[in-house]
Image 1: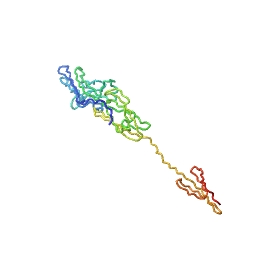
Image 2: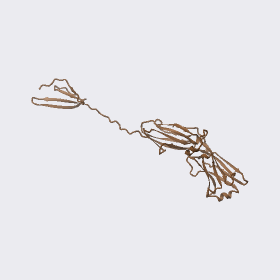
Image 3: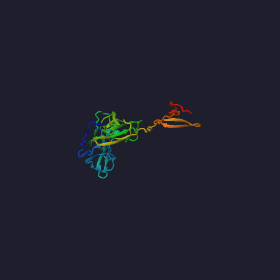
Length: 308
């Protein structure tokens, strides 16, 4: 299989996390723990990634009174760097546990919000900070590694189907986000794929690929895009339909000769005409014979005229 691949990174991204606890007031602490699963923005987590927030000391009473109300939570949540996504406080109704829910931006959003830095990596260290509203110096943070995913954008309504024709045998497919991908397809002699434009780097990259048909016959194929660092996979079905042209009909030209014979007796004469293929042979007679081809040109066999 043929593919485009950049150096692989982040083999054990899911195991990387950092916890920091800051104690400012005596008897009051706030700790944040990172989630155990790997962080990525494809697929987008509908419930967000849960960074656990734990209080200890005299502030426990405040936490219990605020259960079930994210707006009334006694702490704020902040994301660093801010272009990666956003976070909000949340408290579980059943258990009373507190969290900062982290929602990363999609590859399309990240491409718009991230700075265009040449040292941008396909992975980003994300820090979630939680701090008390009344005492902002009482805070804690946890860091985790976010491995960016990718999105496919194609000039058409359906991004999973590429319909190509002789009049439109080339299209552009854009990969946004993490461009550290591999691209595979089956029909190497019928379909050509090559990068034609690159912009941005790392988790907020942008690469444009040209997909071009190099055959005149009908075929179908599948373009498979994979991201080894996260296991993300996307497929594009390719369908090429050539012009429907009528097959030329075979023509057979048959040439005939006309044989005209005049037979006479003592009182009457008869005119005989025979249409014969050119492959036929006409025996010579003592009668006057004239031959005509299909264009009407007269050819006279040099024979002695009959006597009447």
